Image (cartoon, rainbow, N blue to C red):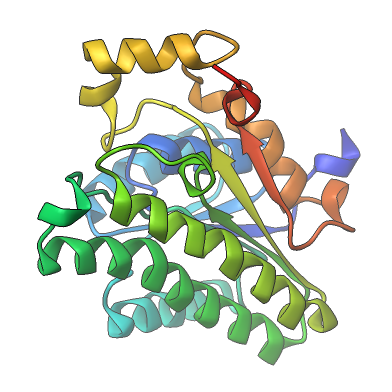
Length: 255
């Protein structure tokens, strides 16, 4: 549909070397956007970029470590140089987890999760928003939150807290950026298999979790594409400060 068409737009996706990030990149490319693939593992990004280009898309791989301000700044400078302007869409997808009871977590593990999942979102959003404002261009920032921001679970205190912060930070971003024509929204995925959680979801405990989801299954990565394209495109042009849950009904479950 024309409303969801991203032809002429460019989207930057962090954590694009695999999992949900790769899926987001392919969905955005499929809708016509040029994609900037950002992550620490440049060799994986280059392979994905080559694959997207072989299918007729446009893709640029840039090395970025969201925990290092200088790396984020360097990546955006490279994008500016290569593209001649800022990206139109930013998908803040980088994330990690360090699972443990909060009483047993180390300071190092707690800070590592916050530095990637929350501080990294701030660094990338700040750089991207400033670039758009300086160019006088509208844009869309999509932060990847999680249903764990609203539905607690044992041993994921740092992850859940970081995602709850991202959820609320998104609303503050929306409030501050609206006057510049920049929208800020979030996606809150339910349980989708990724490098972070595949071991748990394949376990007996994971199967018990699956049975508590009203749709009785985990999500497929492609099932996030519709909500992603809504927030990235003109179809969502009057949406800002919103978090969309894509979770098979998990948040409304009374089980």
